[in-house]
Length: 232
Image 1: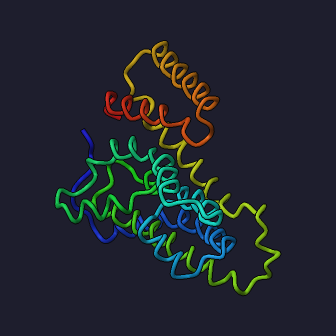
Image 2: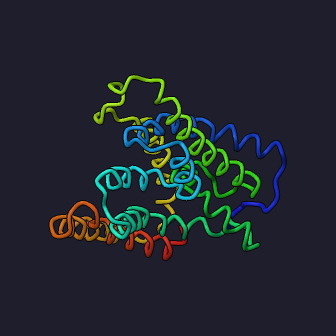
């Protein structure tokens, strides 16, 4: 049973904002990537507000630059964002029951918010965390495009990995989530190891067969099922 409460206080919201702010700041450099693809400020703003998927945007920028069709880009985005299936399983109980509020908070969910949140967080804290990271993402990508016009084009070379700070922060936060959740899986260790080995074997075979875009779908499906069965 989760200890999370449905209410919250302004102090709790402020504490949640302080907790999420460093992660939001790590997203600031990512907006420069959109400038590399010569996207306009309005395009990037709408993309961030409506899409709000860093990895999806990373994948779609080069596809858009190559003139790929809408269906191709949609399938790639769905494949990449399928990782939100297990995330949805373990965070659905944190959402309010009112349909509009539930849909709004669900839209604000991202990898970073999932990694920062705690199960005992009150609803106001969850809202503060998700809004902080969502706002940081949208505003920083927009600011990145506007600032890119003031920088020499040579400074925006394709080899510059401006997404590294966000990836590094997310990696650290993800280890914290794993540390909290893995002990809840009640299966004995031999079974856990067997399941992980099966998942790895399937991923390797599908990587060789389907390539780097689709191979991880079985891993996502297995993780969804396992987390659901474990109640994690």
